[in-house]
Length: 340
Ligand code: MG
Image: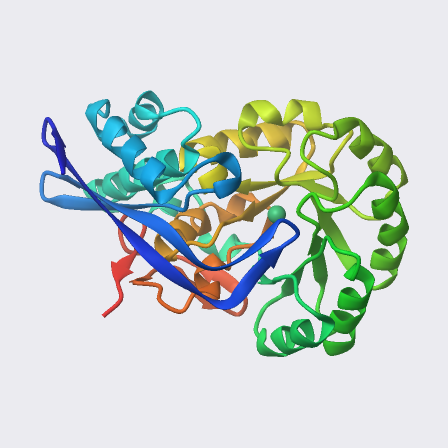
């Protein structure tokens, strides 16, 4: 526990259990360790969450250390955007997001308004969310697709030699719109040969076909691609977006990748100014992180906020699925409570 003026920071690590072993082109896992943050100030508690991203060298331990450091630099919590920025520890964006989310929750509770209202947004204008189908054999993928009812679109993880068989299996099990995420798993030639087939199977967009740094190859791919291409691993923060023009049609913003709501809003403004489309995505998160992102949904074109649905032990309740759309409650702040 750390105290800075009248702000008290408490944090604990939780283990989240995945419904299915989660496979991407770069590995598999059955559990995640996230950090839950409570920021107490003058009788109110703001909730935050860090879902550390191993690919960027983060862990529950590094997030916890960063949060302890940040709590010492926090200052006045009602200056929530400035406070989050001045406290940030470089390279620990998941911890930065936890602090930023807790500060927004606290501010909303102090002002008696949900976050979407602080932003002047109507939650009914959220795009419907997709549901993610992890990498697996065509048989298991088909089973997962049959379980995934009530969503407007499915996001299928690809990035192996089996890709076209997997996607054909998905297509034979559903006629829902499909999105594909290759998680950097293809080469330029491999992507070019797959994209025509993907388009013929009714895929609506493809996320991160090539490794993050290969922007020249991406420009070539975009020139020839029949499908819109979205950056995920190639984009973290607002400053990354201008160099993606001509290489991607859109970006996938994640609170854990960018450092929270404040930076996500800056990314949305930059992407819009550059004519890019926007998806709001997530990591494996509880309803704290997912609900924080849900408040921003009216600002974006595509939602991919299913991280809390991929775990069996979400300790919180927040935004609810209503006809395929994720809608926050009208409670002040995040509108997240502990599950009873
Ligand atoms: Mg992705």
